Length: 282
Length: 282
Image (cartoon, rainbow over all chains, first blue to last red; front, top):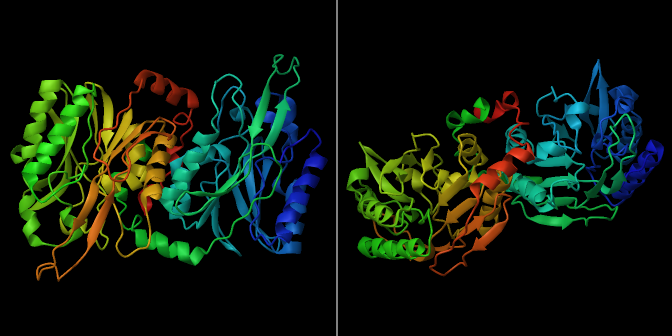
């Protein structure tokens, strides 16, 4: 989905899309990262700190708790979380029935010219999280997390049978690069190496900054490239959105049969944890 | 390349292919895993233990030291290594000029019905290795290692600018699966997540077992699927062999520019080693 400057409209649109997916029979429904607002991290602006809310005060969490109950569906909800004197980029995991199972705070925080997240978010302090939902044991990574094999491996080792990644990624106004295929291949790799389906939901649309004294008269536009996708457990993309459309994509998995395949393939039997110290060293 | 029962013929063919690559201007030349012999791990047979040699007695290592000197090329040589009362699946890293920089012993040992490597090889005790060769700092993983994100991440953290994987993989006589695309996606993922080119060399051809009392009258054939490939630093396959042909594939990289891209992308800046303990726990 694409976002606009009106948070109420964004939430209404997200609700409409989730209702559509639930009506189609979906069990677990993933929205993009920080769907309540424009991607404010494109610029540095103290004013945006006020967008952060505590978990219990977040309007999207409140709405989707109700919808999770109404349709008996699982909804991981991405939101900008205020906590004490700082803020996090957080997902609240709402189980079917509406209970909040817990939160995950984004571990890896990017800091590029137009993805200035270190200005807004403290690095997550929850560690990776995996939840036993009504429809399976799932892990969630948030956007930049999706580039790190460590996130996917940790969540799979903790028992995740599917990995979900809400995202906001698009063009690079300075770098002359379309990162879309690279972005996909990272997650296809996590899927293939961990033998788990991966589900990624990205935003679409172009968002432009209004130059102001506060943002040092920055003028830029980001074009979010959509391309949301779902892989099977070998990393093959089995359903995919295009770069512009607002849409619902869906797939169905037989978790028991994937668990069996994961066991048969022997990768987890043959791991050598005593050889992996370098990963914690640098 | 494909292999036959005559080790001398296999070595001659490997030499001919390496000379061809060197004449084309290659700097680092990768042969498939255990190219001196048929893939003996298809069956359990005590007799094959006698194929293992010490590093200093291995005919392929001796031949390729000479060729590394003659052409000033780097050649990682895969061989079945005898060491004390056991054996390893090993690569000797021969630098341009012919010096052996060291060995790497395969960390992850598979053990499927027709890939019975735990019968032949002790799990490697060298840890992951990275070498400063004349043409760049490179890491080598051996076959099954290529399915593990930990191998690729450790080698990149240790300074590898390119990852090489000699391999022997093909059909699964019992499982109804073509693992080729899955196999490629794992390595494309390592490439994409670590921002390094990946080079994989696999064997081709069909190898059949002769039933005998020693192998419990096993009758099986493995069809090795070739499909050797080279990725750029975003995991895109830029050159690829087909499933049957014996051939040389080549690519050229500007390491300095890839190092710069890896830096600019910020992934290694944003790692959170204190969050990765789970990887060493299971």
